[in-house]
Length: 320
Image 1: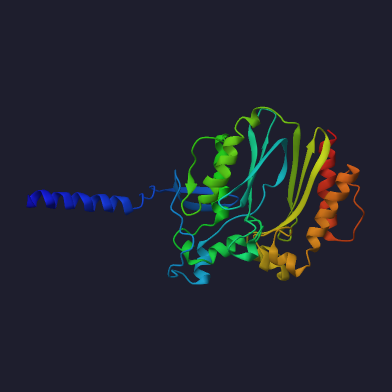
Image 2: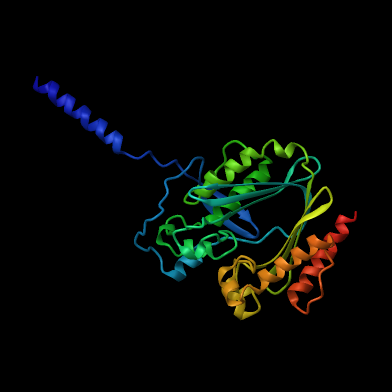
C-alpha cells in the first residue's frame, strides 16, 4: 500500500511539473547573411520564440561595446523599381499597425517587399505612440534595453531578414525562418499579411508603383515613391534617409539622426518643427491636385531640388 501511495505521489508531482513548465524554445541555427554591404550572423528559428518583453536583466556590455556589436540598416534599395503594386495592412498585438507593400514585375515575380509598423496609440513608451518602428529611433530604443544584450538584434534586423527571404524565394506563404529575439512582428504582423496576399499577386489590380532612391553624396539618400491607379496619381511619398553610419553624414549637426529618416524621425521633427514633413505633405497635396509631379512651386531648398531631380526621372518613366 505504501508503495502505491509513493507511485501516485510521484505521478502527481510529474503532472504538476508538466502543467507549470514552459514549452521548450525552438532550436536556433546560425545563418550568415550579406545585406547592403554588411555581414550579419543571426540565430534563426522556424517558429515563434518566447518574448522577453518587460524584463530588464543585468547589462552585459557598456553602451560603446554594445553599439560596436549591433548593426541594422534602414537604407532603401537604390535605383529605379517599377511594377504592379499591392498593399495590405492590419492591426496586431494590441493595436500596432502592420503595413506590407509588394511590387511584382509583369511575370508576377516579387521585385520589392517592404514591411512597416506603426506603434499603437497607447504604446507603453509614450514617445513612440503611432511612430514608425523602422524609420524613427525606435530601434535605438530597443538596443538600449539590456534584454537585447543576448540577441544583439532589433525590430529592423528581424524584418529585413524576412523581406530578403520572400524576395529570394519568391513566395509569400508557408513557414519562414525568423531571427531569434526579433520574431514577434515578423510572425504576428508581416507573415499573416503576406499569407493573405499570396493570390493577389497572381494578377494586376490596376495599381502601379514607381520607386526611385539615389544617394546624395552627403550621407543622405533621397527616395520618391509614386503610386498610380489606372494611370491616375494616388500617392506621392518623398523622404530623405540618413546613412547607417553617423560618420558618413557630412553635416555634424545631423549625425545624431543616423539610421532614421527626415519624415519619420521624432527627434529631427521636433528639432526642425516638422518642416520636412510639411514640405513632403505639401508636395503630395499639390501633385495629387494637378496630377503632375513637376507642378510644385519652386522653392530655394535642397529638399526641393532633390525631389525635383527624382520627379523628373519618374515622370519620364511614366511617359514611356
